[in-house]
Length: 245
Image (cartoon, rainbow, N blue to C red; front, top):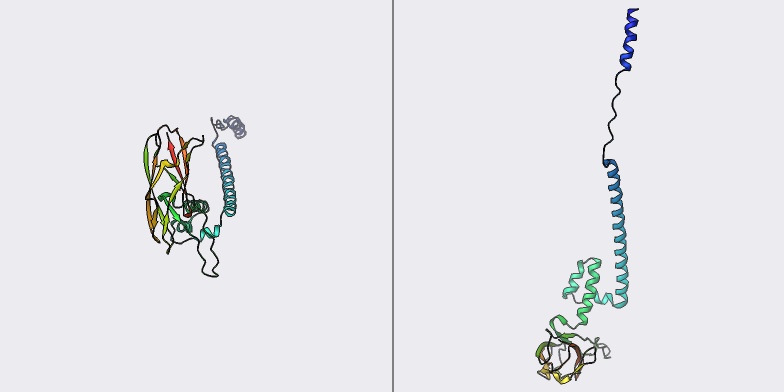
């Protein structure tokens, strides 16, 4: 009996033991929830990047289609291996590839504008059946006066011309139209002179000409342009731009 009493007395002690306290909920943002937010944001950014990449790809395809319509791509890319732009394109990415194509077109059509060289190209024979060879497309470079001019001022602009012919001597006599701006204000053609005029170019050689511009007193401000050509060279043409302030 005393043993049983002790066992019963022990039961309340066990029942009164305090239950383990639950940890208080953490305050602020739960780290688990933040992980989900970051993961979702990463997925959104990744999806946006994929969409952007697809749009760029579509743009490249569209640009290539336009390039094919506007130019003879294969002829352009098969140019002289010594040309700098042609050599650059061998390891270029698609986007750079397109930019180089259009840059090459601009350079070829500008008549070596950067160095102010106007090429003289003459049609000949193809050497096979004796039929005339088609002339190269006319190139009309822009000759820009290197600084703005005021009424009464004078300026000389040197240019270089190259005779591509290996056999013919070229004698070029320069002439030009009157200078005119967008408001139909004019400066007489006589305001432009050339030294020397005419210019004689031996086969395969080049020569320099100074274009003298004299803005008359009373000339109104504006951007004036005129057309320059060689009287006896049909495909020698250029546009002169003079800004009067």
